Amino acid sequence: MEPKDTTTNEAFKGFTNAACPFLPCHPGVEREFNCLFCYCPLIAYECPGPYQVFTDRNGLLRKDCSACTLPHNGYRRSWKFIQRWLEKPRIWDGCAQDPKRIKDATSER
Image (cartoon, rainbow, N blue to C red; front, top):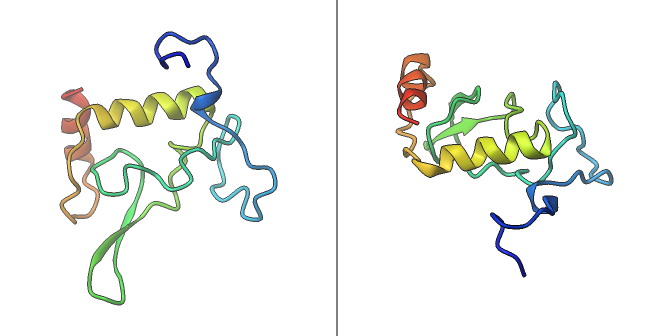
Protein backbone atom coordinates (compact mmCIF):
# COMPACT_ATOMS: atom_id res chain seq x y z
CA MET A 1 0.00 0.00 0.00
CA GLU A 2 1.37 3.40 -1.00
CA PRO A 3 1.38 6.34 1.41
CA LYS A 4 -1.17 8.99 0.43
CA ASP A 5 1.50 11.59 -0.33
CA THR A 6 3.25 9.37 -2.91
CA THR A 7 0.34 7.79 -4.78
CA THR A 8 -1.12 9.09 -8.02
CA ASN A 9 -4.46 7.42 -7.25
CA GLU A 10 -6.65 10.02 -5.53
CA ALA A 11 -9.71 7.81 -5.02
CA PHE A 12 -9.31 8.16 -1.23
CA LYS A 13 -10.27 11.86 -1.47
CA GLY A 14 -13.94 11.26 -2.08
CA PHE A 15 -16.90 9.48 -3.59
CA THR A 16 -20.54 10.11 -4.39
CA ASN A 17 -23.12 7.71 -3.00
CA ALA A 18 -25.70 7.93 -5.76
CA ALA A 19 -27.93 5.44 -3.90
CA CYS A 20 -28.23 7.65 -0.81
CA PRO A 21 -31.90 8.61 -0.27
CA PHE A 22 -30.81 12.02 1.07
CA LEU A 23 -28.67 13.04 -1.93
CA PRO A 24 -28.38 15.92 -2.49
CA CYS A 25 -28.48 16.81 1.19
CA HIS A 26 -26.83 20.20 0.69
CA PRO A 27 -28.05 22.31 -2.25
CA GLY A 28 -25.56 24.58 -4.00
CA VAL A 29 -22.64 22.19 -4.45
CA GLU A 30 -20.81 23.31 -7.61
CA ARG A 31 -18.59 20.27 -8.31
CA GLU A 32 -19.03 16.52 -7.95
CA PHE A 33 -20.76 15.84 -4.64
CA ASN A 34 -18.30 14.41 -2.09
CA CYS A 35 -19.97 12.11 0.42
CA LEU A 36 -16.69 11.24 2.19
CA PHE A 37 -17.34 13.90 4.83
CA CYS A 38 -21.04 13.15 5.26
CA TYR A 39 -20.47 13.86 8.95
CA CYS A 40 -18.00 16.71 8.92
CA PRO A 41 -14.88 16.15 11.04
CA LEU A 42 -14.95 19.87 11.88
CA ILE A 43 -18.22 19.72 13.83
CA ALA A 44 -16.33 20.20 17.13
CA TYR A 45 -13.98 22.87 15.75
CA GLU A 46 -14.06 26.47 14.62
CA CYS A 47 -14.45 26.57 10.85
CA PRO A 48 -15.31 29.04 8.09
CA GLY A 49 -18.39 27.18 6.92
CA PRO A 50 -21.75 28.79 7.64
CA TYR A 51 -23.44 27.41 10.73
CA GLN A 52 -26.13 28.31 13.21
CA VAL A 53 -26.04 27.56 16.93
CA PHE A 54 -28.97 25.93 18.70
CA THR A 55 -29.67 24.41 22.09
CA ASP A 56 -30.63 20.75 21.99
CA ARG A 57 -33.26 19.13 24.22
CA ASN A 58 -30.55 18.39 26.83
CA GLY A 59 -29.54 22.04 27.05
CA LEU A 60 -26.27 21.60 25.11
CA LEU A 61 -25.17 24.08 22.46
CA ARG A 62 -24.80 22.46 19.03
CA LYS A 63 -23.77 23.55 15.55
CA ASP A 64 -26.24 23.22 12.69
CA CYS A 65 -24.04 22.98 9.59
CA SER A 66 -26.81 22.07 7.15
CA ALA A 67 -26.17 25.24 5.08
CA CYS A 68 -22.48 24.37 4.58
CA THR A 69 -21.24 22.90 1.30
CA LEU A 70 -17.46 23.13 1.95
CA PRO A 71 -16.85 19.45 2.85
CA HIS A 72 -18.95 18.30 -0.13
CA ASN A 73 -17.89 20.59 -2.98
CA GLY A 74 -15.66 18.43 -5.20
CA TYR A 75 -13.32 15.62 -4.22
CA ARG A 76 -10.01 17.49 -4.33
CA ARG A 77 -11.36 20.82 -3.11
CA SER A 78 -13.17 19.39 -0.08
CA TRP A 79 -10.22 17.13 0.78
CA LYS A 80 -7.84 20.12 0.78
CA PHE A 81 -10.29 22.18 2.81
CA ILE A 82 -10.67 19.55 5.56
CA GLN A 83 -6.94 18.78 5.67
CA ARG A 84 -6.04 22.48 5.93
CA TRP A 85 -8.44 23.09 8.85
CA LEU A 86 -7.32 19.98 10.69
CA GLU A 87 -3.65 21.06 10.57
CA LYS A 88 -4.30 23.56 13.39
CA PRO A 89 -7.74 22.75 14.79
CA ARG A 90 -9.31 25.16 17.25
CA ILE A 91 -11.99 23.71 19.51
CA TRP A 92 -15.39 25.34 18.99
CA ASP A 93 -16.24 27.35 22.10
CA GLY A 94 -20.01 27.21 21.70
CA CYS A 95 -20.32 30.78 20.47
CA ALA A 96 -22.22 31.88 17.41
CA GLN A 97 -20.19 32.26 14.26
CA ASP A 98 -18.20 35.49 14.17
CA PRO A 99 -16.64 36.51 10.82
CA LYS A 100 -13.77 38.25 12.64
CA ARG A 101 -12.76 35.09 14.50
CA ILE A 102 -12.89 33.11 11.27
CA LYS A 103 -10.75 35.76 9.55
CA ASP A 104 -8.22 35.57 12.42
CA ALA A 105 -8.14 31.77 12.21
CA THR A 106 -7.68 31.94 8.43
CA SER A 107 -4.77 34.37 8.70
CA GLU A 108 -2.99 31.99 11.09
CA ARG A 109 -2.86 29.27 8.43
